[in-house]
View 1 (cartoon, one colour):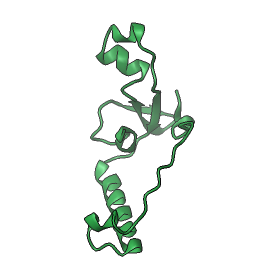
View 2 (cartoon, rainbow, N blue to C red):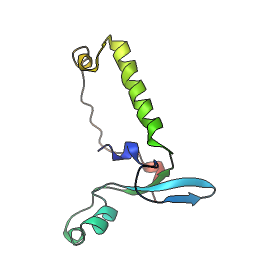
View 3 (cartoon, one colour):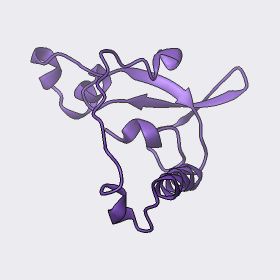
View 4 (spheres, rainbow, N blue to C red):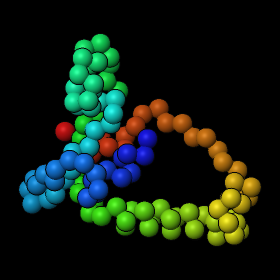
Length: 110
């Protein structure tokens, strides 16, 4: 489920694709047609695909993204007054939010 967050980085598999002077990487979910045909062979014949195959902008080294995530967690701890990560859950109320459609990658669909 976190694959999309790390997709497009140097540490991800796949080749860099250049299109109109911009760099992209191919990304596909493990329930997509691409993954089923590549990794599971005949499974693709009887199983419905649930994922997409898209090209996403190349993002360089993953360290920058990890540092952004850590910064967001530190900020959340500051806002809630949590001095340690384990205090965060005690000082907040987490609310489950559902989404009917996943439009996150729509601009990048192949």
